[in-house]
Length: 144
Image (tube, rainbow, N blue to C red; front, side, top):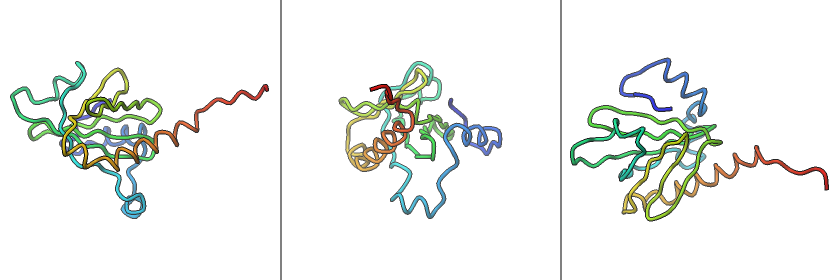
C-alpha cells in the first residue's frame, strides 16, 4: 500500500502503523545501530508505481526504513514524498545485478552502484530481520 506522505495525514499514519508497526524510539534505533538506509538510486519500478516516478530524466531516489513489523520504502518525486508500507510476511528481496524489493505484486529495483554498496550492512540487517520474522510463521510437522 502506497501513501502520499508529503504532508502529515493522521489516517495514513494510523494505517501505516497498523501495517508495519510503530517507528522505533530513538534509543531503540541507536541500539539497532540505525533503522534507516542511505538513499539509493531507483532504476525500475512495477507498472503500479510508474505514476509516482519522475517522468523527465531526473534520477529517482528512495530509502528504506525498518519498522517493528515491516519496512517502509520512501520514494521522492520532486517535492512530493511517497511511502510504500510492506509487512515482513509480504516482503521478498532479490540480489541480482542490483537489489530489488518485491511485495503485493509490485517491485522497486535499485542500481548496483556506490550508494548501494554503502547500504550493504543495512541490507544484511534487513535480511536478518526478515529471516527472524519468518521463523514466527514456520510450520513444523509434529507427526514424526
